[in-house]
Each structure stands twice: as structure tokens, then as C-alpha cells.
Image 1: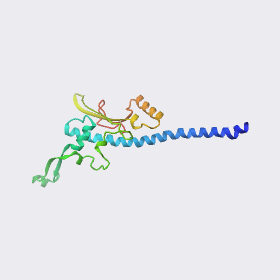
Image 2: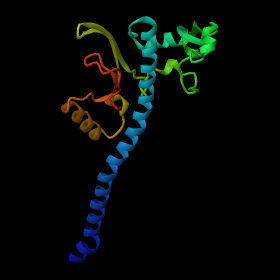
Image 3: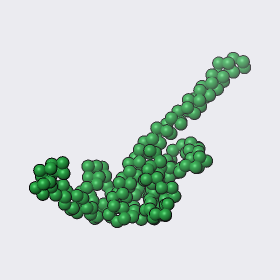
Image 4: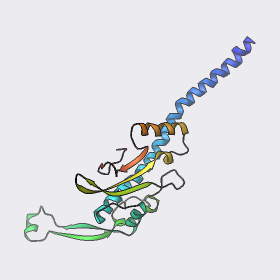
Amino acid sequence: MKKVLTYIVFPIIILVLVFLLVKSIQQPLKFNKEKAIREAAAIVKLKDIRTLQVAYKNVNGKFAPSIDSLIDFYNNGKMTVIRSIGSMDDSVAVAMNLVKREAIEIPVRDTLLKNRPDFKAEDLKYIPFTNGDTILMHSTVKEVSGVDVPLFEAQVPYIQLLNGMDHQLLVNLYYDRVETDRYPGLQVGSIENPNNNAGNWE
């Protein structure tokens, strides 16, 4: 019986313990690697939303109320840009009235994100790695120091972005964020605390 314990049972127990130890070390590493991949994809979308929101505000004086409004703005909206003819640094050209500034309207889609072959406005609203879950977005006008300030925020909750990953590690991440008074996910802008449209990953 002692030989059975020594040569068979104990080695099996040791192997199982080693396996569990290795797994407990590898699981957080695997989780963090996949989390970084998913966050990177979501951050691209949040930055695109910010780019379009800033342009929308420049045209309309306030932020878009929904992502659908941003998509329509990208597909059908126009922006005013200033075209320069000549240089203000050229005193001779200025004296001869050859330097001109001309305001022209061009389609938004021909100006913003045009160098991004992967950009599709219609996909802007969807959280990556989900089955069509949508990014949360709000906008408002809030009085800050006696001045009405347009504000917006767009959010990607971890519960949706990291869905399907290790459940316990996801729960731990969620409550760590909540307990430290941080948004449990990725967010750009804020309608509660104006932050110059910063992302919480920056």
C-alpha cells in the first residue's frame, strides 16, 4: 500500500497541483492579453466618435445627441474649411493684395478619417467582439462656471466588451473599478465632469 501511495498516488497529486498552479498563473496573463486586444479595438472607435463629435460641434454649436446622428453627419454633412492662397509671411504678396482666404464647404467624409481604409461609419456604433451591442453615448449642455458648455460622453462597458472571457477575473475588474470610483469600462468625454473630451485610457 505504501508503494502504491509513493509511486502512483503522490506523483499524480503533485502533477495535478502543478497543473493547477500553472493554470492559475497563466489565466490572468491570458485574460490581460485578450483584454488589451479588445480595448485597443474599442479605443479606435471611441477616438473616431470624438473626432466626429468635435467636428459636429464646430458645425452645429453642440454635440450630436446620438451615434446615428454622427453617422448621418459623416455620410451627408458638410464642413467649412478655409483655403489659403498665398502666404501672410510674404509682405510683397500682402501689399499687392494677392493673399486670400476663402471659405469653402466640403463633405465631411472627404475631410475626416478619409485616410482610414478600414473606417466604416455604419459600424461606428457597435462594440467590438460583441454580437451587435452598441456603444453608449450621451450629450448635453451644462452650466459650468456660469457658462453653458456642450458636453458628451461615449462609453464601452467592460461587461460587454470582455464578455466570454474569464468570468471571475471580469467580475474582479468590474468591482475594482467601481470601488475606486472609476468607470468600469472605456469612456471618452464626460457629461458629469468636463474633461476636454479626454479618454479614461489616456
